[in-house]
Image 1 (cartoon, rainbow, N blue to C red):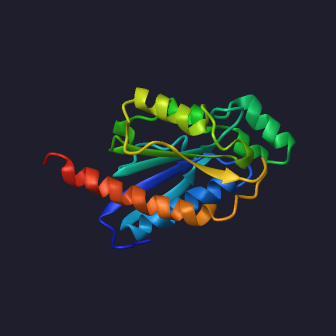
Image 2: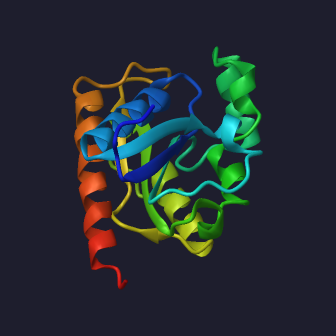
Length: 184
């Protein structure tokens, strides 16, 4: 797809019940509206690929037990009806091999999904992912953001997809500002 964009973004996500995937796709649409060529890719498809050159990396995951998923929490999701193929690798596992060199950028923004009734969590997937990815040399352009689901399996809370698209557009603008401020 040639969008005529001069900047690119990759939205890497983990999703067990499609809620995080839908948010990732909405964020990619928002990035495209900001002039980026953007692709949303599940972490299960990206795990074995080589270097990818982008201007902005976006990472997202569902919150499992107040943090990123682990093998056991993904298996629990499978027992609740998630496809077993999605339990093979999670964002936490993928982060182990994520480096700015692999993506051609240290620019990063992070999102998570979480159940609406526990909206304010001191710890969540986004907070954990940010901490781990900073240790790998990434630089956060903004604080992690949360998108809400009504129940563990979903659906997304009303208005969240539109909010995700707007957030993607804002993150595209933040990345452009960061690129413009970078020394030549």
